[in-house]
Length: 336
Image 1: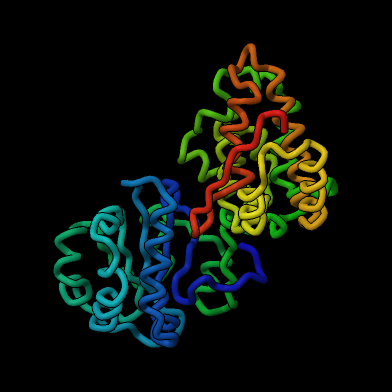
Image 2: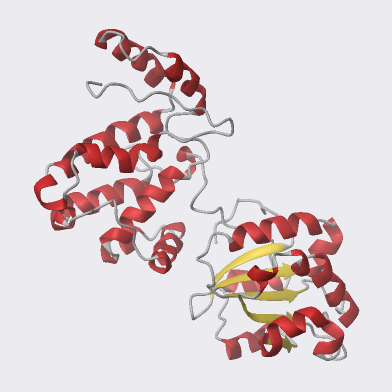
């Protein structure tokens, strides 16, 4: 896990995947009680769940970092204030609900888990004494997470891969985000993938996408070389489409909308030159590199059926995205 980043919400930990590649989330009783941020926990937890394919299961662990024994009533109240406020359809996706407490008297499930949740989860609820029993449930947490749960280190939660600023990704010698350069190089060195009909139009496996993103978060760019080309394309598009600020920032949209599409070409180029001069360097380099790449892919149009027109439709959201005001603007004449 990356150090130096802060919690998105203290008390809710995204702890990776279990051996069956299901997401693991941890509720930390002591931090939630300390910060009194139950509503934030609920909102963030729901946003986590929305990132995964519907009906995909997940693991939920409830524990405390300190030596204070969690009583049955403590756990029940915590669940009522957090988990039970999550959409019930999402809660049905819980594959295992595990409560960890060294309190030998924290009671039976009936005393610890609200009745409605017992009915929903049935035999998916497990009460254990310490983290060493997690292996029994195919859960193997990273050592840094285990140490954090035991309050031996301060854990800094990893920044999500999607939804960042472009410049916040690790930058390589080319001036581009490393993952982006590695993906483009993959296709350039493996041209047969560009001959596949519908390349960049077709989406890859969602589960394989999650695996690749997890590897990229760990800076394991070698994982790109052994991934399916449609999965790689999906990660490329989703990373750009979901940028916190689009490659072309929202500020220029109003200007584009108000620009006469029939203005002389030279004036249009001069206007865009001003835009480019004010863009961050990583944005400028990314735009130029992507345009070169799109033109390269189009050379295989006879085989992949993806000419410049089709590729422009596919990649347009990677450059522009509607903002909260839903500003729309005219599409300029194709001569531009």
